[in-house]
Image (cartoon, rainbow, N blue to C red; front, side, top):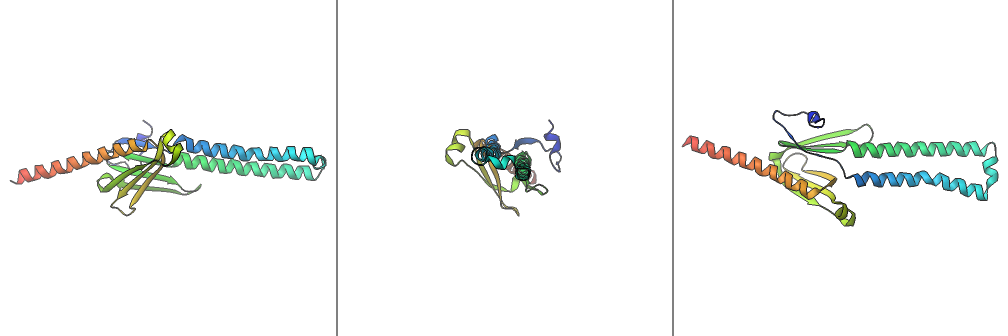
Length: 189
């Protein structure tokens, strides 16, 4: 699998459990918003055509309006591209040993944080509102004992399933730890 081969700073024996992105509905919301913004110049054009048609035939005003519309669309494309990058490059990776949070903050700023599963103290899933309940997405909050005390997986699909999987991994780590402690006690006796 392509994604499994690109886990940052992969540790020996580490296996991919979950690879998460925001729910597709989040990007669809951005897309609808930018399509609405793209329709505004057409509305202005038809308004000018009906009420002030002389502006559209003027040799100075019409090229100026065309230039403004071109700049407007350029900015819309830039912001849509930024929204796509933010959606596509914000990922959360859960492996059998750690959790990796990769966030794109702006066009040229990327932040990678990771926590060992053994340092996780609490995992909570949340769904707020009608849309999140209908489309089954929400947030997962992970409380740790590390420097960054709280990880948040924002707007991911099936947050309660993710919580269940992470809790299962934590139980496996606990069982291994307690199994090793019991084995050491038995060997010392």
